[in-house]
Every structure is written in structure tokens, then in C-alpha cells.
Image 1 (cartoon, rainbow, N blue to C red):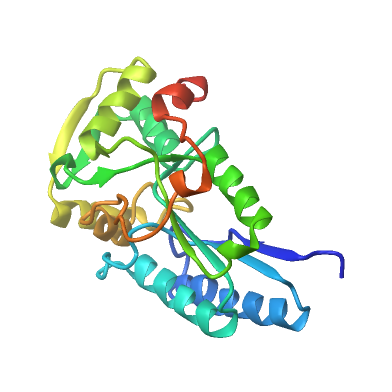
Image 2: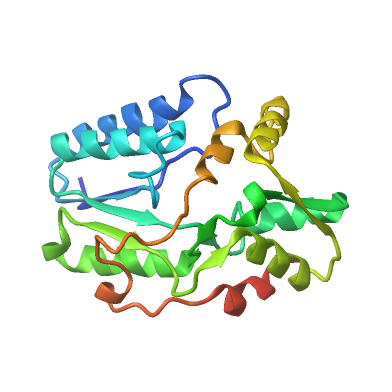
Length: 233
């Protein structure tokens, strides 16, 4: 066996069928941990998600946290990375709303657009993984990765529209109405929003301050303004 490290980036944003979150976030991670032990892999890095300790009403968050807890029992020296919303050329957040703006006369301000995010560049996450692999003293730690800037949901949508040069109505939608829309959207192969994602939007996705992050890894994060104009169209 030539590999000395496992890096698990597998995760789901939505379920195609009931139980998918548990199968991937909990069961699959357990199997990866057991396999790493069996093969005597020395390093295991798991990419989780920021804010899962607080997002108690979201099944996505609960299964992510359960997966972390199972990982700790089987492979205690694993390093866990919890990124905020990730941006980059093929991201599923900025690109998703930019695409929506091309076909819809409005963009939904779910919950009034007050949810806060601290987006992090995918390249900075990659550099973080490299730094962690280079330093065995980081085994067993949890890292929260986020950019320096905090934006609310309304600011993010406004920035997307400005960047792609589109004028759209930002329409406030209550969480309850958004969940109905999300429920109906689940019939699509790749739904733009799901009821569980609406639950996540009830919680801010920013650093807790309880764990080390990019600063402790010696990384100065790139901003959305530096990167997004290169790929948002």
C-alpha cells in the first residue's frame, strides 16, 4: 500500500431517496475509517461542514455531526475540516444563484436574507489540506475554515447580480413558504433548493471561534471579490 493518507471529501447536498444522508455521512465514513485502520493509514483528513453543531433542525447537519462522532471513535487521530460556504469555478452556491438569475425575474430572499455566511475559497481549502499533511502535530484537531469577510444572504445575492450584470427583484420569502417551494422542487433531478436546505438557512454559517482556522495554518484567504468575477457569468 503506497498511500499514507486518506482524504474524504464525499458528501451530499440533498437526498435522492430517504436515508441517503445517513448512508453517506455516517455509514460510508465509518467504512472509510475502518478501512484506514485496516490498511494502517497514518493520516486521515475528513471534510465536514461549518455550523453543524448548531444547525440541530437540519438532517444534513445532524448526519454530518454523527459521522464526525463515529470517525472519532474509530480513528481518533483524524483531522476534521469544517468549511463555510465554498466558492470557486464549479461551486454549488454562487453558480446556482447566478444560473437562477438568468431564467427567473426574481431571486428569493429566504427568511428575509438575513442569514450570515463567511465564504471560503476552494483553493485555500486545498492549501489547508497540504499544510495539515505536512504537520503530524495537527492530527486529531478540528479546523474551521472561512474567509475574513462576513456577508448576509441579501448581500451575496446582490453581489451575484452585480457581477453578472443582471437586474432582478430580490423577493423576501418566509421560511415556511420556502419550505413548500423546496418540497415541490424535490421532484427535479437536481433541485435548486430543498426543505432541509431551508432549515440550514435558519442558522448563520460563520466561525464559532472555538477552533483553529486558516490563520493558524498560515494562510491568508482570498476574497469572493478577487475570485468570483473570473467565473461568474
